[in-house]
Length: 435
Ligand code: GLY
Ligand code: MN
Ligand code: MN
Image 1 (cartoon, rainbow, N blue to C red):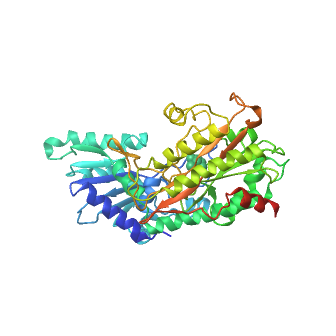
Image 2 (cartoon, protein in one colour):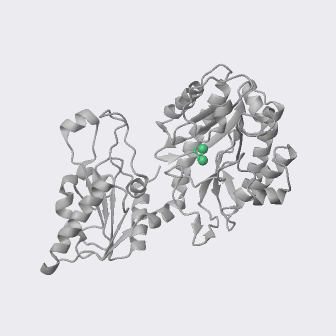
Image 3 (cartoon, rainbow, N blue to C red):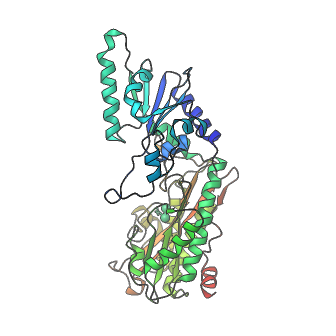
C-alpha cells in the first residue's frame, strides 16, 4: 500500500528538481472505450498515478513550487449524483483535498479559466509534450492568450520542458512500498502460474490455461493482467508476443506461459515453459536446461555497480556455446558472438525495467554509457531460445520455444529474485505436474 504521504513526498522531490520558477502540468489518462461506449475499467496514466495516487479520468495535476495558497492543485470532476448513480463515486473537490492531499481543488471545467493566472509569472512549464493532443491544444491556446496580453504586463513562460525524463528517473528507483506492491503482484502471479501448470493436459485449448491464470488473478484482487497473457503451445511458443491463445495443446509440445498480474497498478512479468504432458523430451530438455543455465548465470552476476548489459553478455555467451554443443550453430564461439549468429534463436534483449508499466520507464543508457545497476532497480531477466520450423536445423528441434523470465531487484549487496518461488528446474516442474 502506497500512502498518500509517499505521493506527497514524490511531488516535493519533483518540485525540488524543477526549481522555484517552474511549474508542472500533468493530465490524467483519458477514459478509453474498448468498444463503442461500453464501460470498461479505467486505467490511470502511470506518471499521473505515480504523483497523485488518483484514479479518475478528467483530471489535471498542477504543481507550483513555493506558491503561498498551495503548491498542489488538482482539477477534477465535481461530485454529481446522477453520474454517480450510473458510474460510481467520485472524489470531488473535497475528496481531492481530504483524501488525496491536494492543497486546492477545482472542477475540471474551470481549468481553462483558471490556468492562465497560474501560469503567469512562471518561467518554465514542465509537461509531457505531445502525449495528449487535445490537452496540448488547450495549453497552447492559453499560452497564446498570455502572449497577446504581454503589453499589459502578462508574462508568458520562456520554456517548455519535457517532464518525462526527470519523472522517469524518479520512477526507476523503487521505494520499499513499491517493492512490496510489486511483490504482491508477483505472489498472485505465482499462484496463477502454479494453477495453470498443474491444470495443463494435452487436448486443452490455450485459453483454458488463460482462464486458470485469470481465476487466481481476479480472486486475489488483481482484476487485470499487466499485459495480454501469452499462452503459446508448440510453434506458438516461438511467437514472442503471441496473444491469440486459441489453439489446442498437443501431446509432446511445450507450453510457454508469459503472464503477470497488475496489482494496484504495478506489474509482474513472469514466464515459465513446461511440457504439456508433464515430461520433457530429450531435445526439449536440452534447450530448457541451456536457457535456465544462462538465466541463472546472468542473475548470479547482478549487483550494484555493474553494467546493465552484463545479463545480456552472459546469456549470449552461454547460449551460443550451448547451441554449438548441440550442433545448432557451427563455428568458433567468439566469431559467432561477434557476428550475432545466435539471433535466429534468440532475438530479444535480456529484459527491461518493471514497475507501474510492464516495460517500465527510465533510461538504459546514461550519455554514451550503459547504465550501472543501483539498489532499487527492478527488472526482468528473460532469456529464451525459439526454434521455429523454418530454421534450417534438424527437424527434431523444430517448434521448441523456451523462455524463462523472473523479476529481480538490485539490493545493497547483490540482487533478490522476487519470483524465486515459482518452480523452474526440470525436476521441480515435472514434480509439480505429477501431482
Ligand atoms: N511480457 C512481455 C515481456 O516479457 O516483455
Ligand atoms: Mn514477459
Ligand atoms: Mn518481460
